[in-house]
Image 1: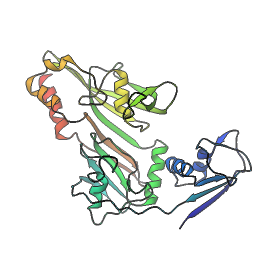
Image 2 (image 1 turned 45 degrees about the vertical axis):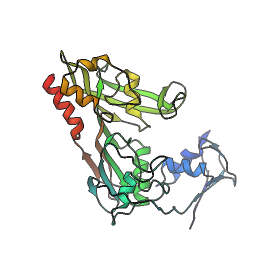
Image 3 (image 1 turned 120 degrees about the vertical axis):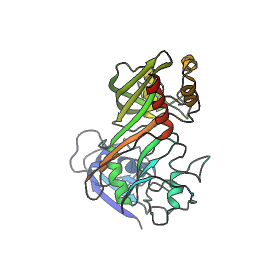
Image 4 (image 1 turned 90 degrees about the vertical axis):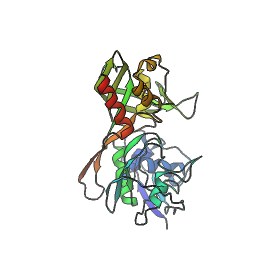
Length: 325
């Protein structure tokens, strides 16, 4: 069954965007959902479709939204035990390990967090993000570990998505990078767009792309005769762009340890103590962990705050550095 919403533009400032107008008028619809509805031609302006989310509207325009019934999912369950930190009738918070993707996609349709959730009999997920991404509100990279919130119903999905759109979510990561950040604490503000050289990578742009803001703080600098200079850094996100922290650290010239996509060769690695050297070389993923996640519960409005310690593979490297420092 389709849900139709009709709106009339009564008063408006010059050059107001259609997506912004709908976002302000329709509680519960995230910017991402509105954008997808427009792209799928489910939004009409004066009976016409085929326009972009940035389309300008004017006073007197008639706008209609067709919100289709969400598709059901037919994914295969994956027998993988997830570390569930919190769960109620509306949401699930998991501590995702490195090495598992959030949802199915090209090359991997069966062994993901979504497939793993399908193996839990009593867990039902929201289905407004499409057949392959039930429950998925936000993502962290396959080789990044840490906290993720998943929606069990469509109301919760829309509510938390809106919190992400309004940048009111607390998201803090820990990472280990080469060298010293200069300054050691600060804010990185750039545009991030897809790389023109490699479509699997993201890149900094000064003319196009999406605004990306990372607040960072150096927790500790490790340096000495037996080890290269490395910095343990806390990154607090104001936005959540694809590969944001990895791209911003690369932009500063302080690439993340173990990052094979945004990497730089270092001769210094040869001078690392034997055990530490072995652990850094054998690290199969980037040293990046989502350790804090905070948001308001979609129904009660209560502020929820979760924290996750570094997993063993990352903690072991920090312990070795502290002994060698």
